[in-house]
Length: 212
Image (cartoon, rainbow, N blue to C red; front, side, top):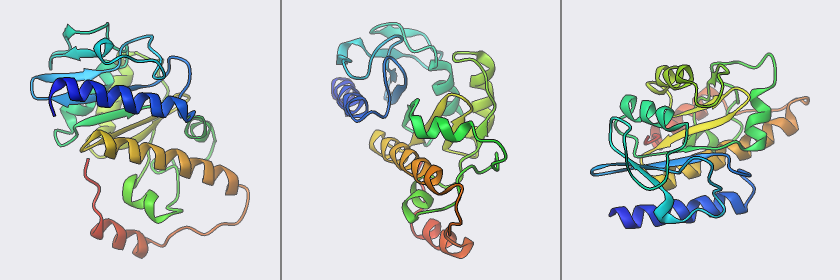
């Protein structure tokens, strides 16, 4: 995929995410690796109206090469790429159910959602909670770096999910699965519920390993 195609893919997916209410206003950001740098959605932009030429192109030191000024979360994306060389795309949203999940006390901060469905186990796996830092804080990027060595998906407290994937479509699929499962978990949280067994989860992960 060349740069022009990559820019169009980001803009198309961004609009789809916005139109379906998975993010709002000027929240969230998407990035994608290129052969000569990487693309990230620009600061202050709405995913619903993003034009391909507005998307920021950066080098691997974080310097702007073209497009508008990058998202203030660009250091977060860069930290994930540095820790996960196999990842080629990252999606970060402020999706409502996932954010709500990050506010609940007494959940397992190492793995917030039990394996309620096969597709959650296949596409997300474990979901740790990253402690709260203000958006754009350097400490947030460095904390995400520590988590991303072991996890391709994580939830920022009071903020939203960060999900890396081997492709943009894989990262988006996993992000949508996370949001759907967060909504499901919130609906059964105060009830008795069944999750997949550890053996069932192992079988799924052995058969369908996460590529991120």
